[in-house]
Image (cartoon, rainbow, N blue to C red):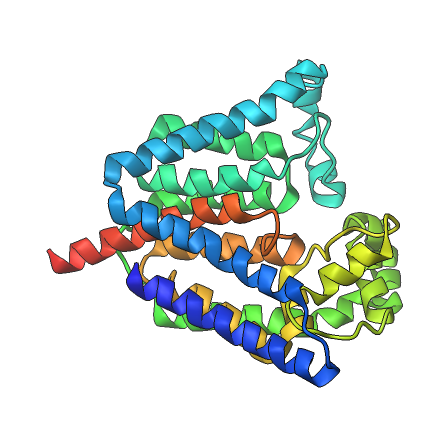
Length: 325
């Protein structure tokens, strides 16, 4: 756990130093960059303090209560507004709607991503009751990437050894892929690609990306002055209600705010802490895929990262105990 904390602190320090360079260059200090650092580190320190004092039963209880509270928070509004009926639940099995538009007959929820973290944790612990509940939560939350990832994990995780290092080739390939992904993303946000997508699949790319195309195009065309971490989110917030308040692509945002150096630091650091255990790797893989299509870094994500770090520290601690034993 000490090594993981050190790695993430170094990663965040690199991102903030890059931000300071841009701020000095542009002659203005931005407090929102400090806030970004807080949102990176606060859940890390909270989870580390918890794991340092907790035994296995404490961690299990924390995860179980997190699952129950998330299920209650998701289901209660659905029952109260009358959307949780059989016809709507059957409608969730429309794979075309899931893949193309990610529209839910009962209403999708970001809690689906929490359920994914909990599913990985409980299947690691062989807790059948709770990993089934978490899987149901993932599906009902109906986030496109989460549901598709769940289908893969239901198959894969049952055959993954609980105490095995991530193969070096897989780890390196993953880091390279996620470093390259935001750098290559500019191709997706062109009129030419949007036209190609429509002609090929018969669906508007902006609708398929759930407005991410228009938001990203607005940022690119806005000639935003870069002050490092938080720049794009601050710019979108100042634009008002016409646009979303974040880019919905954190990997691209980090790349735009902190250059390729920041992308390398972020990807290397986070996958380094997940290399000790295949379950840690699968969880980080999910998180980074989500970070490419959504907003899971900075404001509003502290709870998500507390759950993620708690699970990761548990997986890695078990690996360390196994090596010591």
